[in-house]
Image 1 (cartoon, rainbow over the protein chains, first blue to last red):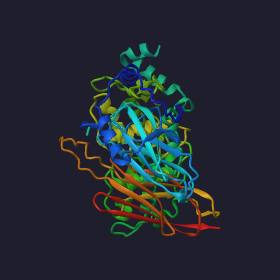
Image 2: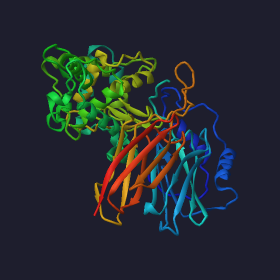
Image 3: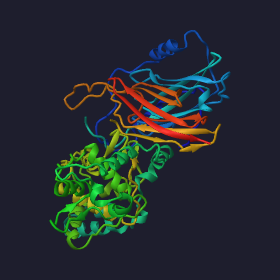
Length: 162
Length: 259
Length: 106
């Protein structure tokens, strides 16, 4: 499955998403997804506002690499890279990652600086459901740049209870 | 042809199933690693990223740690594991000559603890036992599986094979129906592997930690709504031996990353 | 103490950008899961991960429950001088795990 940066805002076709999640035949085991209240896009917007204030967030410069189809929502590998000289005068200060469907809208934050040499971080995140992930980079000149990625989360076959 | 063979009752049908199940050589069998997405395969292949390596490291530490009334460490008798333990995991499960019992790595480790270190055995699914088992299996990573199937192992192998072929649970499914007949096909979000078990103890994303093969077998049985055996049960040991025989010639991958 | 695993080059040339990868064993319990009795398993997560190099902070991450269990991070830093790279993880119960790795810069 190719990982690619996507900064377009095309929504995943809902019918296709249902077909993918429901396909497979045998129903084995209970669903392991957390049944807590999930965040809404509104909660995510509030979390973003809390961080960026009235600043304008522009799509671009940020490359968010995450599989289009996540094999397991418990651990989804993610790479974020931003083109920046990473000098004292011009560098990425903070990268924020937001979720619209997880119980909490904040996922992880990275604090970088000129010592990094390059703005590229990797980690693995949890996704409670098929959703859009948003990464926002705050630069040393106060500008804000973003990228989004839509991820389909599938369920495994042989699950355990508890 | 396989479907009609599966519907036959009686000894003739069972004999036919035995023949069918043993027919595909190990080299045609597919490790779960081959069916992972490129991202997860990359995670398994990167020792700096593979979370199962945390347990390997933990095992490496325990290897050096004296324990028990005899205040011995594994290293005290076995020295450097990279030298003394290479190839060992390829021969497990194996019959212990003294007692006649079939032991997998987990049980062998605990037997060493109780008999030689005079230390209490580790709980089967504890981080400590997962760590030591991962560490030992890891010393044979890349080496081909090669368990003994003759002599004292033969009756255990037969028992394991019978379990593999037996329909079970409310869904009335036998192991071979997925892991021989439908390899590569999708089951919910998973793709069915050949059930080779060469990556265990494995870091399974569903568990969010490393886990044993027996834990995985319990999940399989739960999936078909069959009665689950206990971790370390003789049924699982026999089945583990049969799976190891099926994986003859295929490389150990521990620690595997699985979904 | 939680098991950690840190991978970085032992030596680097001055000015070289090196990649540092780290893993730490931690369940990152979200607080949303329920046990077999239906009771919520309490939240227990690593909150922060901070890396200093020769005394200066070079990387910091704030973790929320959305970070996967046994958190993995990869980031880069510029090799400047020979010195200790100190890795500090702190969880939401005040437990701190620290590891130190020496980096030699030629």
